[in-house]
Image (cartoon, rainbow, N blue to C red; front, side, top):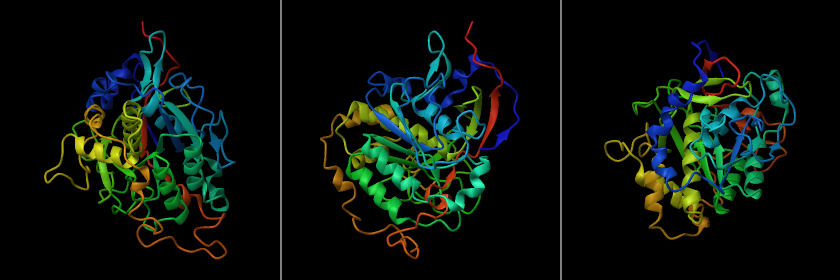
Length: 373
């Protein structure tokens, strides 16, 4: 995450800058549900359990990296906390009116640490650490009962390729009924390389738009795009108790994970495939021709998806993986000597968990927590 200088803003203006909530008509969705009873796993850099905008919404998680920055360090849990706030922030203060409000403020967050912060000094050691963290994290989260898996990360480098373990983990999640959401990638100005895990079949891949619905230049445009969501000037919370405006498909994916949490809360028996199709069928601002690589099927609309979901009957979640069971997406994983079926334990973290997909963030407010007068 790159921090850019910006003029400070007062705490009591943070909520008014959360344009994404209005753009996605969350008030309409909240007439039905705010996400209570749904668990969203945030596979990321960790989440600040004590952040006032998240307190009580974060479950005990798991660290699959095992080294690097620790609680209290500057390079700890910044990206993950930002994503958790977009998904399930509930604000703070006497009336909850200060701080960040998430799209599903009553959902629970299950943090799984699978990647280091970009500024973590230990990142230089990443090439000698476990490369299977993402796949293991997906499986662990599903086994803990996660309903939604948020992957605001990815490898969209020129050398990106599908990984056997990740592919199998995604199929495992889908078959168990967990919806998988991922960032489409931030390679829009760098060649639009395919990003994984967004490109795995069954994943809801999310591109980024600005407040006018315009495709963000940095957002990867590819055939796997499912829907779009806010990804420019998105207010994010930080463990330092300050607030920033962030850019990236990370934020867009988090918005959609929150939207899925609302749909899952309203219709708990719908399968991942049904929910993915619901989001596509009910998306607003549909591109000409019905779909394009910039926006997928359009801007995600949780209220419309909730309404349309009432007419569906639950299906078999295994149907989501039936079409490619036993095969790898694309060209398949590169074999590693001594590790049949995928990269070995010394594979680079970048190959397993990918890069953070929050392109940049600018400081909005420099003070400590402030209550509105």
